[in-house]
Image (cartoon, rainbow, N blue to C red; front, top):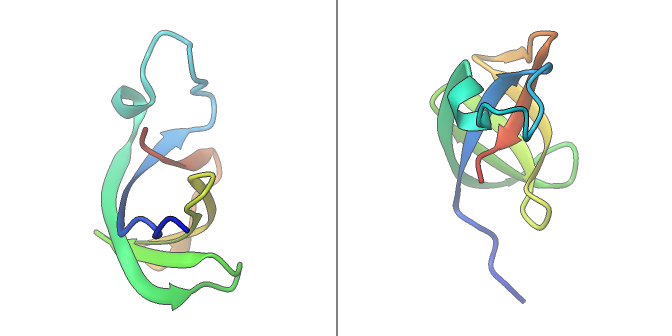
Amino acid sequence: MTPEPQRFTILLVPEHVEDGDGASTEDSAVRSAVVEATGETGATGYPRYAGDGIVADIDPRTRTVEAVLVDGAELDYGLNARVAS
């Protein structure tokens, strides 16, 4: 079994940004944060990661952000949270 990653970079990008539209996701991000494993499991059942004002439950196998709080609040409409490649 592969150990879970201890760190991810989360990008907050406008939802209209699509992969392959000419601009990279990293260049289109309005905020980024390095989050580290907390050792806890979130309400989603996935490992919880936190850092730089962002708390996220991330599926380490698919690198999908399952839940996220930004500065203690839900993500603003029109923004998506993605794990940087």
